Amino acid sequence: MKLLPVSFLLILFAACQQPAREAGVQAVEDSLTTFIRDMRVALEERPQDDNIRMYLANALIESGQYAAADSQAIIFAKDSASLDKAFYIKALIALNRNDTIATIAHLTKAIAQAGDRSEYQAVMMNADLLLAKHQPKEAAAYYLLAQKLDSTSAEAQYGFGRTQEILLDRRMAADRYLLAIRLDPSFSPAYIRLGQLAEREKDIKEAFRYYNLAAKADPTDAEAFYFRGRTFLQLGNKPAGLDDLTKALSFRKDYPEAKALLDSAKANNFQ
Image (tube, rainbow, N blue to C red):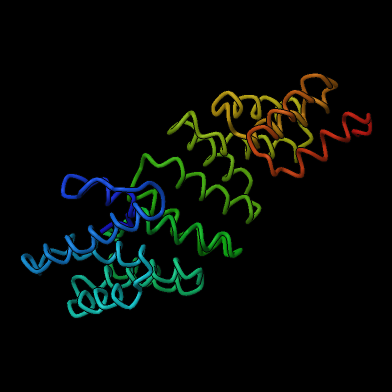
C-alpha cells in the first residue's frame, strides 16, 4: 500500500477513462468521479484485492468523501493482516483535514503493526511530522527505519542528520549529511546544512565551499543562492553577493531574509 497522490492514480488508469471535456478543476473532478466509479466496479469483481481497495480509499479521500474512505478502513481493520492499511487510510484522512496530531497517531499505529513491512513514504512522513513538532528523538527512530527500508535514500540520511544536529551531536549530523551527498550528489539541502555547521565554527571559507556546491547541485535552489550570497558578502565580494541574492529572490519571490539582506547590502549597511 502507498499513500499515492490521486494525480498518479488518474494517470495509472488513464486508459480506462474518457478524455476530459474541460480543462481545470472540473476536468479533474470528472476524472476523479470516473476513477472512483471504476474502482467500485473492479472491487465488486475482486473484493479481496487490497490494492484496488486502497486505490479507492485514496481517491475517496482526494474527493473529500472521508466517511466513505473510512468505511474502507473498517473493512481492512477486520483482518489483523491488513490492519496497518486501515491505519494508513485514517492517517491520510487526518492529513487532509490538517490534523497533524491524529496523522502522527495513526501512522505510528500503522508502522507498529507493519514493522519492517512498513511503507517507506509513510515512515518518512511520520518522521518529518515529528521533527516539525520538535520531537527529534522520536523522529530519529523513524528516519532510521526509513534507512532500513531504503538504503539508497538521501532524504532519510538527511532527516536523521537533522535530528542529531538538533540534539547537538554535530559530528554525527555532519556524517549523515555527507552520506546523503554520497547517495545523491544533487541533494542540495545536505550541502547547505554542512555550510551552516561550518559557519557555526566561524569557518566562512568552508561554509562558502558547501554553499557553492549546493548552488551547483541545484541551480534553482533559492536557499543555496541566499547563503552563498551572504558568504560572498562576508568574504568581501559584494558584486557576487548581490547577484546571488537577486537570484535567490528570482527563484523564491517571498523570501524576506534574502530581500532584507539585499536591500541592506545595496545601502552599504551589511556587517
